[in-house]
Length: 272
Length: 245
Image (tube, rainbow over all chains, first blue to last red; front, side, top):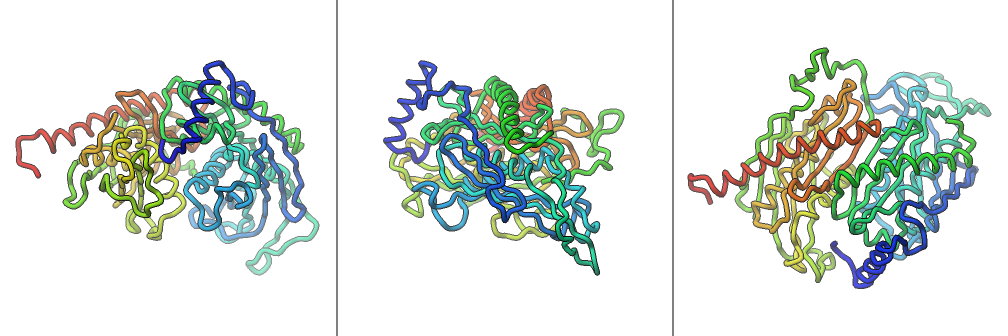
């Protein structure tokens, strides 16, 4: 464990002592995520938006939809992109300036979960093949950091996408022109849900809070789709997992993912 | 990565893949240890069409100084692709993808290296992808482990890596570039074979819970094959009869 302070060492031994008794530092069961609260439509200027609160971690996601040029090798598909940023007001250690590797990883893991699930049917975003497509950009900002940004950010972005409306454009003289007051629902195929688990010693805990996050040996984020299949994985942290632990984590992510998907469906009115 | 095309035949009716391999076969892997003069340890790997050079410096002074840790040495990893390593020229500056891969490779190696005996120092691992052909992060990790051992860094285990995945509805070992682009899933795995620990694990693509477990198990078989090649590379440098520096 690199860069671990004396306080973190004491915290870790306290957390481990509690885990031996089957308890967590905030009183949760080992496989119990913090309560998730989703508010939608929080940013009227965005095409879709959501605020996700997972315990005391809070993230606001906004979706912007606008015409764009397609990627050269994907002229028959629209563009989808996720970004994430930890705002300097979110935590004393958060800094301004170019993104640090952990923030880049956060954005890429959230993006991968949504992209690989095929959540959005991007083939419906083509205005003119190879020339003009619709781009959907889901940008998330962390406003309060109490651990597990991966899941909170993923839930916020997914909820924002589920509630987003796609404006209508028509091609005129090789350029997209907005057709006023005509919006459609975003074409959704599945709802990806990520579940992040940490390992401390031999214990696997779900949705670590910041105290736990700082002394994890290793963590894994598993994203599942509405069919209960696994669509993305990301292992992190300075140690590894055994195969048995990984199988256990996948089972947890499927069962918990189902419950969390219901919370998000309820908050967004999504049907899938 | 995204672009999945259905019109490529990745698996024919006899279960043979587009590059002639069976589903449970890796590409040809060759590793040579100690290929650089200035680095404290180095390795060169050819993993199919991947050509990757790994160089290790340290334990050495940490710059900038505030990064140093009084309790332990630190490991730093830079994974970098040359502009000419891929089809279309890649901009030389590190991309977000390269920064993320550097981080996951670092975290895959950290459990193996014993840097607690070298406080206030850094071990730097530089991974240069000269040619990319799918699975560069695994190949780079394989080369990094050999280069760290070649540098004489104390290690608990070697980290070996190989991807598994899914293409043409079958689980396949060692996903090549074409299968990564057009296939159904790509799961890179890093593994410490003697400690039984998985230290790198990622996935793009859809797998059922059963396929997930089988895919990891298949990947571990590949890791173990690479492990033998890694050991041979070190054996060749340190135990062969010919004269070596």
